[in-house]
Length: 380
Ligand SMILES: NC(=O)c1ccc[n+]([C@@H]2O[C@H](COP(=O)([O-])OP(=O)(O)OC[C@H]3O[C@@H](n4cnc5c(N)ncnc54)[C@H](O)[C@@H]3O)[C@@H](O)[C@H]2O)c1
Image (tube, rainbow, N blue to C red):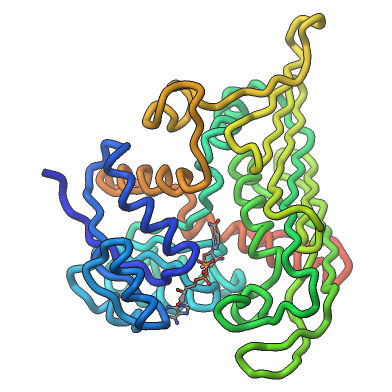
């Protein structure tokens, strides 16, 4: 009999679904030491929380996150709410001694993120930030190839995260559907929402980012605010581009926008090393493109590795070679790793402290865009 782990998820939206799915699926595919039990789901609207509880098999539902924290039977508090609510819940959960999973970005800014890090470290509770793209098998394989030294010295890391859903001036800000456009709820625009993913993966692959030079733009300056009913200035960055230096001497360039017509979620990265290069594209997430200059010249070229074989990261747990998996599986992998480490008393990356490093890069990017100069990234 596996030890049961009672889960309370706060937020029944997009991420509430991916996390619920992960807790349910993980025991079917991974030999994890715990059996997660979907105990309580929390969200702002009672009828929606109830419908979610019924659909996903939660034992109860509530509209008050404090009840989840006060509930002595809850082991894990999983935070899937807008960014401005992360800190308050995480700090209260840490004080209550709960294991904490928090969606990205960790916080609204680095100062708030630091308070969260202090709280979990003082309480000594296990903690994880959900930068799930690390655990797409092809992205994990990229990390393996880099760590094996196959690329040699790395010169360049470039990443994009492009969307097109806010081009219309009619899209409002605020409210539950469009909180991402309200700086009070989101903290920033594409920098914290999309580039945070690219930055987390990049630093995992290639080490710390030390300095940044950025530009941002807010193309639509005023939007209706659903919460106030008034047309108000837009405080988020609609687009952001930045150059950076990594501690290992390599150069980075990153771009994100919600104004790239035709792109829904085009997250790509390319890494160029002395011997080899790697490329990846979220729209084709099971493939890793790899070029190795050491191949014999007559067969040298970009190869497209179909990351489905059993000896590739996580894939031995799924189907048979050639059959692929998708987006939701990255959350299952994250949960499997977290439960495995939890039983051993080991941290799972990225911890709050590791995610704080990403937050500090975001802070430096936004400061650089504002001040129109290079900024040094604060050390975590
Ligand atoms: N890892 C990823 O790829 C990824 C993708 C999307 C979102 N996110 C992150 O996940 C978080 C949630 O985003 P989402 O897209 O799921 O949002 P969403 O709008 O779909 O859902 C938000 C949920 O939070 C609840 N909520 C809001 N305020 C609350 C409060 N005070 N108390 C209790 N419940 C409250 C709402 O009722 C709703 O259920 C954000 O931090 C976001 O950045 C991460």
